[in-house]
Amino acid sequence: MTLLLSSFDSPIGTLNLIADQHVLLAANLSHVRALKESLSSDDSLREVTNVKRIPVITDLLQDYFDGDISALNSIKVRQPGAQFSQEAWKAMKKIRPGKTISYAELAERAGSPAAVRAAGSACAKNAIVLVVPCHRIVKTGGSLGNYAYGLDKKEWLLRHEGAL
Image 1 (cartoon, rainbow, N blue to C red):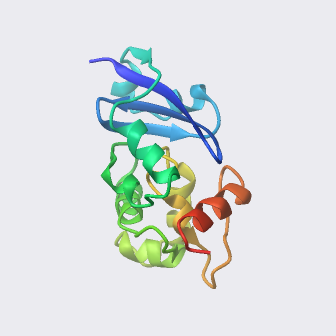
Image 2: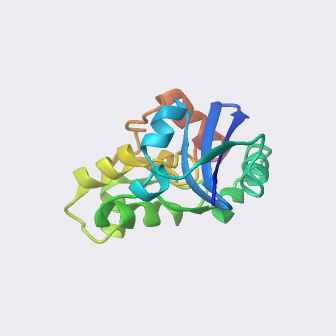
Image 3: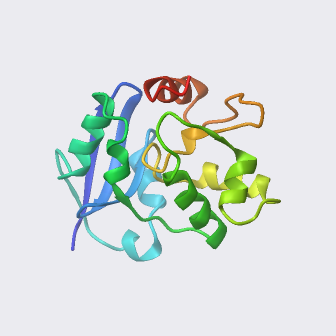
């Protein structure tokens, strides 16, 4: 089955999206090329069709930016990655909107309390920005830490969700 490629204009920039039906495989704020490069080896061989909107996913993104900050919870995701990264991404998906946790707490929730650097790496490798909410991970003590698309976007998202 063909993958769906779309873009979504948001207050933080244009989100590029690739989905397999109702499962989001990649989302970024940079380039479609990088989006395609983040796919699994199997998915990267599949045909990709440009569409104006991706059913369900586009509506849920619009709901999120319109103020329903829990709408992202309903988007199913799949991305390739090592076991620890998979556990870290699952843990990120469980962080409620409006809440943040530290990299250390993410490492603990992912099953390896000593793997704080690996937790940071999982955030950096996250190919499904916003929906796998790496923006909700902050440094111990509460400072924002890093964000691949700029701290201004991370701060906007956290303010939108009521965490700041």
